[in-house]
Image 1 (spheres, rainbow, N blue to C red):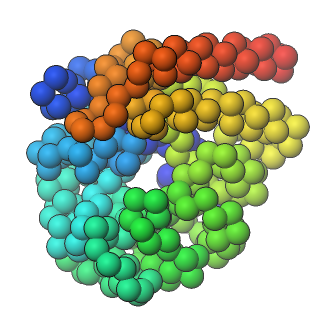
Image 2 (cartoon, rainbow, N blue to C red):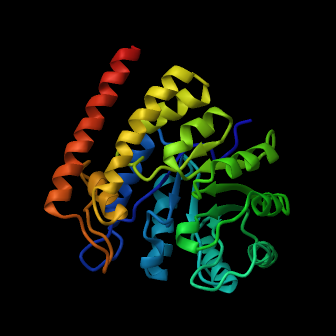
Length: 308
């Protein structure tokens, strides 16, 4: 069944100005480009959006502007992750004040993790103390230092109807398939955060995926998703190879966020700027990234021509 959160949901970057405040005009223009490119949803203030580098004021402002600009045309979720349950609850309430209805929440971080149960308690308290209509479980162990097991995700997912999905960036294929099986036929979105395996997961029934470079190549990612969702094996394989080619961009700089921001900036809407003190792209990095963007554009055009 098609869930509300499906297809290609982009973890949108947060473009900032010289003072590291949100670039309002650039953000709005990029959001429009994503919508017109056919993307199915927006994740604002996620890892790719440098959410923990933003001030609380700028995080909330980014959520507000995204909601205003999208204006209900596609679903929007926002990262409300933080270092304690109380802080997450405050983040959710602040985001609700500007209109958010779906919060993405990770395990807590910058703390000692003692068990999977702490994250179950985390979600229980959030559900008790907020009236947010929808929650998405966000499993991203490289940043939280806790990998949620499939059993934990399933337990949280089944505790309340307001838990509407999970975004899994663990890269654990078997675990993700187990979650998919547990929620098969239910109104629960299974979203892959690992682009390298996302199309095969969609082919087997995942709701969609959340690729960092979707704002650079929106039509490509949408076409790739549609091939996998239709279970066209030959075409999915061709798109899978092309997506893996595009993913090389993220490794062309010390900082994957800087690489993504530079690639996206080539579309003409935003600056490449990342938030201090992260490494920027070098001139050499940028030449390689620009070449790869052109190469992917050319390969995508050739693939489409071959299909037509």
